[in-house]
Image (tube, rainbow, N blue to C red; front, side):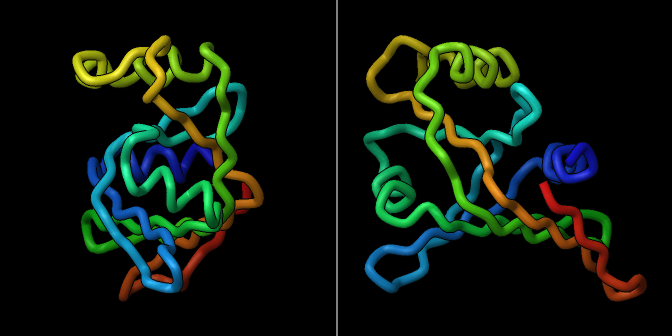
Length: 130
């Protein structure tokens, strides 16, 4: 799990794919945090991505850096606890101008039953489950 988070943080931007009525939707994200041994991402409840995750929590993310890429597939579970939101906002202070642990918009999700595959053109793929 640590190698997954390290890769995503070093890549800086990853792309989150959701489903909207059978149509894939992909957008850039940048938040990834470990809280209580789980990998979390963050968004706002007012965004379409939040509605898509709630309708179908199976997602995939992809990131690329230095000739290697990662694909992470799994289910996102909402964690409504204030502590989880605070942890994310402390990890990303730049979000604090837009989000608050106490607003009705900030939302954090953790990955459940996730599988990450690291790939490149020069090495065989390796898989991490968390």
